[in-house]
Length: 116
Image (cartoon, rainbow, N blue to C red; front, side, top):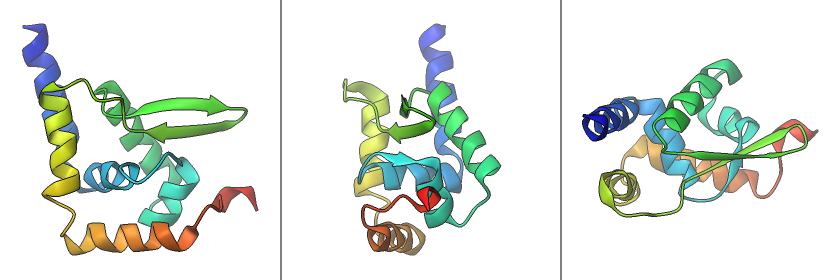
């Protein structure tokens, strides 16, 4: 029953456009919330709520660096989670909205928008 519940939680996490956009961006590199706010042009509380749900579904990991929190995709372990994450990168990358997100991320370069 536990495995079925985890699967349901993961599918729910994938069932939102903003979360798919976040996962798509995290395929590129580790990002802080301020990167995601800048690229997705969404409010910080909304992004943080989505990240909390993705963490609960074990679809992102977080590390702290002082007051900064950096998000990334988890290490691959095989199974459904990795298959779904791979699909975001391969199946959905051609979506115009996701391509636009990647272009905005590239334009940020290595800068951290909230450090200014």
